[in-house]
Length: 446
Image (spheres, rainbow, N blue to C red):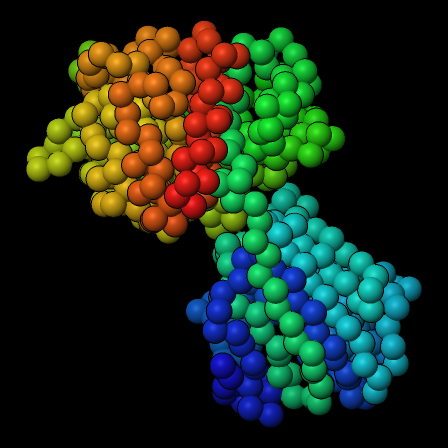
């Protein structure tokens, strides 16, 4: 589509903007500049986020296209961060970049996978950065975008070729959506499953988990390491952390630290799995009201300042009845879906009497993650949020209909990662069985 300029920057009709939104992608395009030209390739563009720049081009991260020799913008900004190939006003391209002269064709390439982004020019990588990292946020804070809340952090967005009033030619425009490995081919695990092993030896435990064929971990503890140290250990093994679990107090009182650690680990999700409350009185309306307030506030900060998705992990007590539903219904209804999502724990939905399949059908797009757990046959549940750890059994051997829950989740298309969790004392024997079972179910229904 073409976005009209309103006469602000362009004189030739407006920007060319994709209708489709892109998250993980590779864009390749040939461009040719006229003398003194200024343009740009914007990505992760939110067409609604034109203000306060309206009626100018919509906001987005920008691969700058510029005649560096003549256009005055080349002398603005900091350290050349407004010259050709730069991440406009944020990161400068190298001075020795391989650019062909004005009037000749060049090829720009942008690669975005998760939060990692690269700018290429004529086959040479110019810059690489991590969206939402502390370094990125510091750069934004010192740029013209400093007052734009959540700049550059949306999960997916349009791609835009900017009309800036000068003649710039484009050809061979190719956009390839990158399909990252899905949970169907790479089931994950919760670090709490191997908490005892991690406490003794983090590197050896990572090696053991990778030996099982698992490379994706949801960490709920740093196990005495800094986030940087843990990330290094993961990178050395070709492993990833996709979600980071934190305590409710840390989420509420140390949100910035949580965001920084999560970005350092490379994760996209922050998870809280327990809301403090009086175990004797049970989870009450007052607890639910405070939970909603804290979740909306913290989730908003994590999304807007770090580009992270906050998920609450159900733990049983919130399925106690309230009015015509449950406290979980109250939390889901009163939290902002833009800032609060959920991680469905199958055991902690089933144990208090909820039906995981019905939950997925009711709140499908709110569930982004899943803990896949099974409950020993014969165990009677309650609203306490607790049970003997050895009531966790290998998937497919307990009383939960794991297969139909996975099928419903895959049909909803919103759950991104399926984490095996086993709190029992038998993880070394049960996890391999669970992994085989989960692989078979995911493969069957994917």
